[in-house]
Length: 313
Image (cartoon, rainbow, N blue to C red; front, side):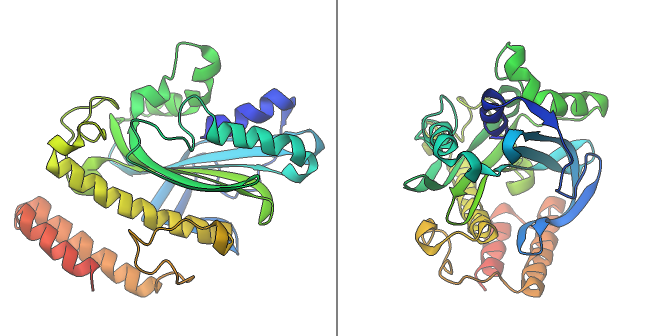
C-alpha cells in the first residue's frame, strides 16, 4: 500500500525531501495509539510501537506523500506491524489525481480493493471518486520484501530490509494481515492507506505448517482442510473488522460511507469507542489467561472457552 501511494506521485511530479508533520520519527516510540492530531487518533494494541521505516516527500503545488512503519517486538522478532501512509493536498489536482487513485485501488495488478484468490475477506464502498475498502489475507514476508528482481520495486522495501539486517532481526515468514484504503473529498483532500499485521504465533499461539502465501493452510482454497487455521482466520477477520471500525472513526467517514460490519461487530451503530478502563481490564484478563495457557495450566479448549466468556461479557 505504501508503495502504491508514493509511486503514483513520483510518476506525476518530481519530488524533494520536506519536513514531516507526523510526530514519530525513525527510531522513536509511540504508545497505544497513532495520533495525527487531537481529533484523529487511531487506537493500536497496547504497548510500545517502534518506528523502523518512514518516508516523506513534498511534491509541487503543495501535494505531499508520507508514510511510517511501526513494529511491536518480542526479543528480536517483530510480532506486530502497523504501517500507515497518506497523500495530502489532493484538491489542487482533483480531477486528475482521483482517477489515478481509483485505478491504483480498484485496478491494480496485485493487492488493492479487488477480489483476489488469496484474500480471506473483502469489503468495500465506492461512490463516485470516494471509496472505503478493507481486505484480510496472509502477508508472505519474503514475497512482500522481495516483490521482484527489479531495483525499482526493491527500493520500496529497502528500509525494512536494512533495518532487519543491521539489527539481526528474526523476520517471521507469515503474518495475518489487514489492509485498508480510504479517500473522500467530502471528508478531506487526503488518501489514507493502512496495513495492520500480527504473527499467528502471537495472535493465537499457532505455528503455521506451511509458510508461503499460496501454500499456507490459511489460503482460502486450503483452509477448509485445517479447522484450527480456519477458526484463527475467522477470529482475525473479526479483529480486523473491529480495527476497521476504529479506522472509520479515525477518518471521520460519513455514515453512508461506512462498511456494514454488523456480521462481526454488534455495536457498529454506536459512534463511540469503548470505555478505555473497561477495554484495558479486558486486555489484562486476556493476557493473564494467555499466560496460563502458555504455561500449560489450561488446555486449548479451556483457554478458548474462558476467552469467549471474557469477550462476551
